[in-house]
Length: 358
Image (cartoon, rainbow, N blue to C red; front, side, top):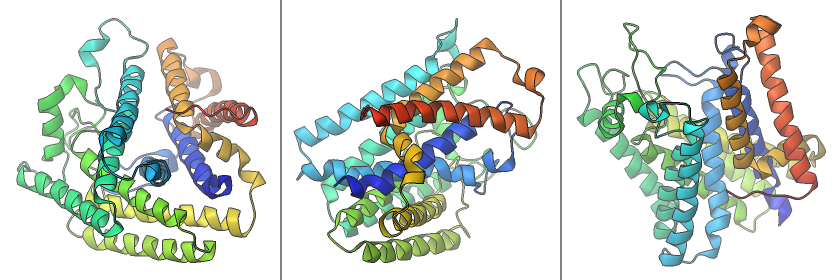
């Protein structure tokens, strides 16, 4: 049974390691393009990291929800207990280190809150609908609803623009401008509070998790590994092709978590998971991936630790550039050292067989 989780642990570890590298440069203004997000439309390798992790959450759901036969009080209790815990952890990270006046600009949404809400919605739909065909229909309906809301309530600037998108105005109305992520800018250079982990994107974020759930269902089947991989590669190709067709009308856009982005990121997630499974289960290449496997066995706890340490470093206002020089290479070196520390912690937990479940 443990072997069947190996490629998933490695993929999760890869996602968390890329999150840590992208979120912890020595200097934000000195970062190689591969570690930067697309300003708006488009997709860089870094833009694939979060949806890949959410996809892995969905794959894990296929195993963790297997013990429930239906949607009832017991299953709902388990789902919402975990979801609420993740939301509270996310809010704690946002508030830490609780500086004076922190409530005035407290950000309600962020990565953990997005994971929690998508997990809860996707889990409820998966247990309710049960069959792959119905779940795929749910993915289509949620994606269509997301597009419909963006189009119906668009500003004059356009449905898929920062200026005109309904997603920004929904979050502004619910949370207030001062409680949104502050580092987006309109075309004229003025600041545009916008939350890339806002509420509207939960609809399509749940679709990403459901694609992972369907993939997990395929992994659980008693089939030859080669047959599973052929199916997964086929689905990956179909998903990527559909994303390019849909992108003609709905741009691939991570901040909005657009429907085409769901298909694009989902296709790449399927491809990468299939490739890792091929390396580990067919080629038997396992040992070099041990650090990533260790990280993938405690992904959320390590990510929490990284986020809190990052906040402490920011709070000290340490001028990294003044000490080590302001260029992309020294900035990357800091990120690599930061990652190495957390890989070492993950390896200690792995060797002691400690798994912290969040």
